Image (tube, rainbow, N blue to C red; front, side, top):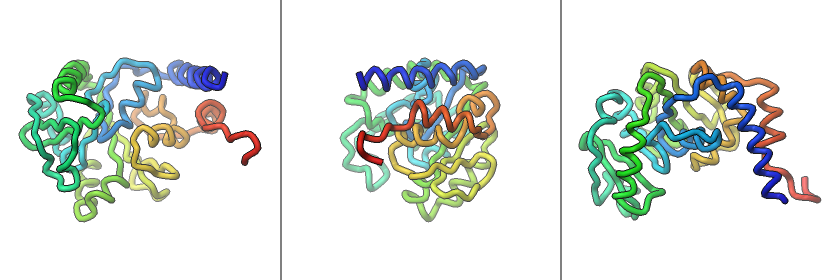
Length: 229
């Protein structure tokens, strides 16, 4: 019964978002699983190759600065990451343009990673791109390059979102999400309380509303256990 209850709550939320969503053929390019969760939560086909993977901020910005060309490069696999903290990774690691690392940490083999990457690259809508970067993750992993990386992201043309762990706004693309965590999938769910997803996908602009918050609390927020507050 509990599983059915949760399922129907999520389906109601999905229906509310889809009813407001005019822009359904969009591509979200994200540095982790945050972007892929949009398609999964809304029940839409993945129009992005950024599913079940992560791209470290320096590589991510390298990719975005000439996205149309670099995303079409042949994916090649390497045995070891250039990032010291990831050199013992057991998942497939692909590269684009000889230097951009793609970490397929939810894939069991290079063949699976390449097959799904190539099929999803073909679905990209280059005329309807959205970009997402996690500022807190970037700050923790690349403290010496943080300011430069954020500036590069801010200079990009197009619609974008920067997740922040602090309420101070960097610019109109900055979204503060309370109780920050490293997991991109969980961060997506948390972020839905703080911005109107349909409005962002329709207009590229961040906003929120009382109705959006109510829908989150009623349909997505975890329910407290009986007898606990």
